Image 1 (cartoon, rainbow, N blue to C red):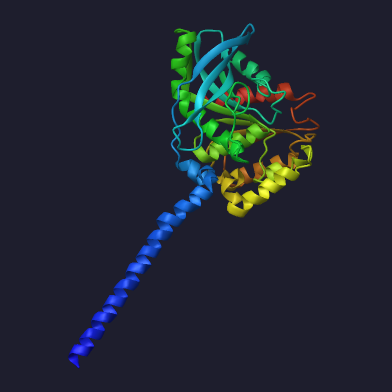
Image 2 (image 1 turned 90 degrees about the vertical axis):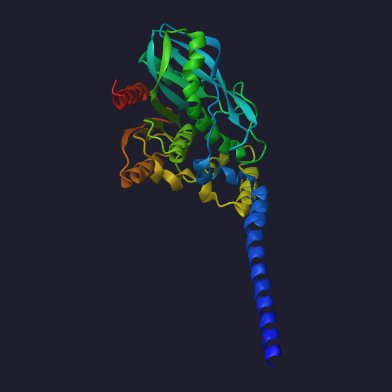
Length: 347
């Protein structure tokens, strides 16, 4: 009888051991294999805000190309840098942009400028930023306005739907990471005369460029003094669905792609509006009430959110002004912008 009981105990122990091994292997399989397969099937997960916050962006050399124009105060000059093809990848893509550089000898703060939506068939370097950049350079700032992938002399963006949009974030974050190389690039063209004060870096964004600036601030957690003109601030994907009436097909193709995207991704993970509470930078915002591209109440709501989070925000609203703050408020907005940076940098 004792032998039978002992045998039963051994069998039970063996069964328990097998069950434990099965559970362990199943958990290991789920954790290591299924999750890996999931990532392969959902490659854009690397662009979620949480994953971008963990990504280390490279410090690639900023170089300068030809001067394309000049005035009494500054040069407008092409610049180049490289960005990862996707977050964390070693393969790089070329991005071009336009720099405005003061002629007078000195060390200057740097303003990185993000342009809004401009059709690629009419885009030229500096479009959407050049007039304001010119005024900033006259007042003692170096500006860098990246073209982004698919524009200017940059490489083509990803052909995967929505990835090209997310690549604007990685482009902006790589440029900011690469600013440490800026003086090395300037030294080749402005030997000992013009340099950048890399302790004084600010952001400027208009329209969709404002969306990119807000995303960059939320992901990086940096306190770059930032000016936003009529920023696109609503949650993704509403922030793009709002504009689908401008497409030739009235947005049919976009909605189809978005439907597929939402089947496999949680859009909240890609939406800057879910992460505005992480912003640490002082922000100055300009908005016209006659804006037909970015409704002024979007910006009103953005300001309310920032204020509720006890964030440092200053808001200028211009009655009747359009998306570019015309017909009469552009100059005032530029003056306010320059004063904001000077105060922020204690100039």
